[in-house]
Each structure stands twice: as C-alpha cells, then as structure tokens.
Image 1 (cartoon, rainbow, N blue to C red):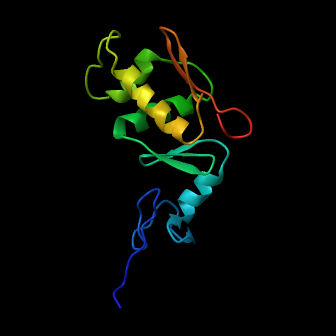
Image 2 (image 1 turned 90 degrees about the horizontal axis):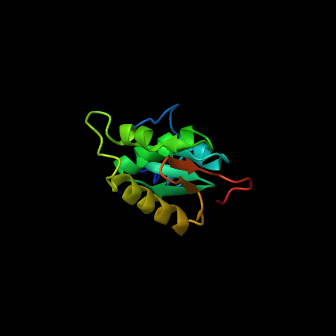
Length: 139
C-alpha cells in the first residue's frame, strides 16, 4: 500500500513539512496551526487564506496584501494610498483615478458575502476602506 501524504487544506503544509510551531493534525485535512487560528474570533490571514469565524476563504496574492492591511487596522480607516502601497510595494501605484483597488475590494466582498459576511468591508467615500467585524462573528 502506497503512502499518501496529508495536505492541510488551509496552509498547504504536509506531514513531512513543519508549519510554524510544528505540525500535528486536528482533522484529516487541517493542521494544528491552522485549526488554532481558525478557531479565534478575530480574522487571521495565513498564506493566501483568510480565516474568519472558522471558515477559510481563498484569496489572490494582491487580495491577501489588502486584507492583511485592512485587518491590521482593526476597525480604523485605511487610506487609499496605504492600500495602493500594500498592493505595489516595489513599484509606483496607480493613480487615484484608477479603479484597480475598487475592483479588488469588490472581488473580496463577493468572497466574504458567499461565506455570510456581507458587510465586512465599508467604503469611506473618496478616502479608503475599513474592515468591520461585529460582535458575534458574522459581519
């Protein structure tokens, strides 16, 4: 019988790779590190996944950068320029007239809404965005 290595469905680590703090398995497809993060009330970005209220939402690389920035601001406004800087750390960000950020936020909102978090990202007109996680879990 061939050995089939398990993969964590959240971070992608395997039994032969150790994730932060080493790996044990709390479920057939979730390592202990991801299981612990997913159980916290506060949202966490791990790899290219947003762990929120026990759910894992897959994000693109750029979506991940924006969500890390929004979550780290914890209910405060994040200016458009700050989000552009997170999206383009090594190059010149697009002009404020560009809708790249709006399109990206729209994609993330759709992913959040599909998991029951319809109002997790607020738009502050002409200024930026705010990630809001209400008490009790679902946004």
